[in-house]
Image (cartoon, rainbow, N blue to C red; front, top):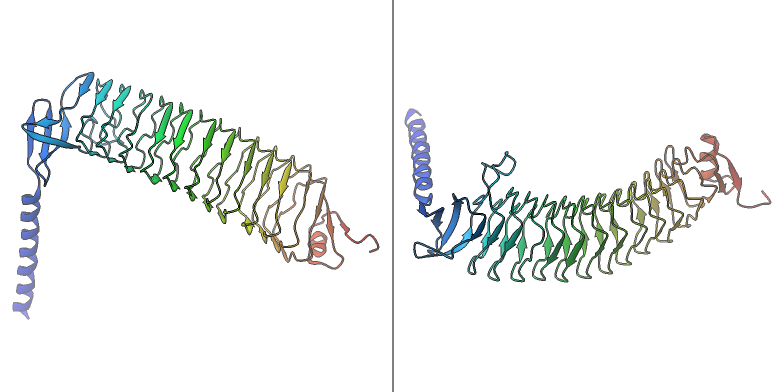
Length: 396
């Protein structure tokens, strides 16, 4: 027994020592050439890992010590231990990246707060996570057509950025890629994009319109939340999913048409779109989601198709400009607080097929008379909740 325990201990010790030795052996050597530190990649080319200079206008060299530069490493020009730390602002106002570089790493230029312009080469294929995040003086950027991948938060918090074009080889606008770009007025999304990720354009408060190409199938959670100047948006045929709160707090959005391909809509998609006046819900949808139009207090017209079977919790809560809503016969369930405080709602007919009405569904609808069938579930609900109702058949 003791021999077995000793043997296991020796095996474990050997494994740990071997792992440590291997880790030391695989750690790349760092070289210095002028203001640059770099490592050699497996193919013999160089990756810049740190810039120690104080230039204002910088042209990054394409060769270091005779080695071709193909990559800019993580945090290479970001002075500070990490993006979330208080970085030391550097003096860079413009950067030219040479031909041959294919990759810009994570946080590579993050918090370069004086950076106004960046020139990228046609060889570039990848821009890393938060690569230019917090570059608050960056005004415009031309992303080369060669780029296929742009990372999360790549241009987040670039508060002076006014326009951007997404190249056609990019298929996914990643999470928070342009979040809080508060001066962004123009976005061109090429026809190769299929996904607009979570938070992609959140709080881009100067964005007035956005055209989403036919290639896009998914619009992520809170992707355009707080785009308070957005007046119109075109959601194309082919789009099938809009995530939670995707357009919430777009307070200038007046109208929207959902495509017939739309099958899945998350919670609160148009929550607090206070200028939204009308909306057409396509026949492809079977439910109106939680808080979908909650606090859309300019909404006067909504068309609910006969494909809808469920009006979910808070769907039209606080829509105090609605005067009437036609509930189709297909609806079987009306959720909690679905029409709460729709204070100008005067008329609604509850079909016989409705077998569930949630708590507080019509609370605060002080002018509402519900039209119901005698001895129906809806009549009993009205009786139980002291709601005013009338029979749909005048002879009853």
